[in-house]
Length: 449
Image (cartoon, rainbow, N blue to C red):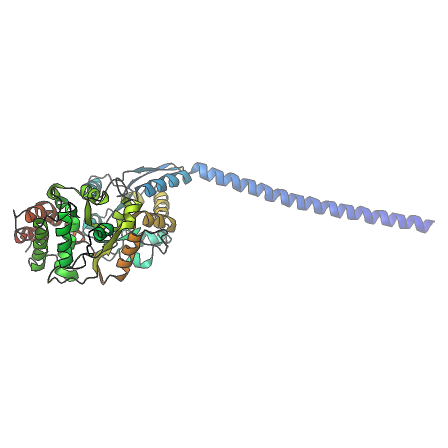
């Protein structure tokens, strides 16, 4: 009996110890769990507090994605989505059409007057030289030292194509471009015409189309950027096209303008061509009143699906006795996103600017922009649903023997403006000779000569 009582005491003691141990263990585990829950809540509160504490910031942007640009709606939606995802960032967007000289003038005036946009989509080369030399825009190498992933979706080749005269990169592109002779294939087929791949076929098409009451070539002679490019390239070839008058007036340029006048005299252009603006020429082609137009890849997006299926694009027709390789085209990367120094140096704006530009240069955005404007994407993305004409354009770009940047990327704006405003309309109407106009261009381009 004594042994039994003793045994019961031992068992009760052991049971009490076990209960105490387990109880302590549960308490510790519960405490740890409660501590972790408290930490999560604290972190959530901190994150919420950080979000609440993000300063409201307003960024001013300026791009060419306005007016009739085919990428306008894509860009507008992107800005709306960005502001929705980042409610503390407000975008004051001042985008407008790039047609004519209005946009160039606006951007340069903004910077010179101290009204610098924080982010601007603008041209490179000659157009950007003044902004670069004045220190108004940031180079990406400097920004990459702090923000190494900025624009990481853009391919290295696309970045390299943007290097400026001082060896630095100041803008990153969204899409590359090509220019060429857009042709309404259906009109040519209906009139039993061959595509104008040589000068005889071009002249034959002009004669027959004119007889049928169709404008052969929609040409804004008063805003003759594309005409100048292609008639000079057609006669002078890729190397001659790069001339900047350092050795006097290039006779091949003279020949190019004489060829333009010859077609004008053949009524290849509309009756109002000398006063026609670019939008008017585009509408002639889009409304199927003209069979050909010299334009850029962005032109495709503004044409309806039916017309796109009836179109193709080919290199400019080589001139008789001209030096142009039949596969030479105008193309490359000529514009991109710049970040102003004034905006970047503002500590309240810098992170917001970087976030915005990186968003606009994402693979998703580049794909959408390329789909809209028919351009060559600057990122490794596949552009879905390309129309037949866009496929032809991409093939032409891939097979090009040379890619030349536009003439206005090498000549000063003032010199190029002499050709556009004071030259081409007067040359084709016989009021000035190409030699006289180009002599004046040379003086403006190289005043020291």
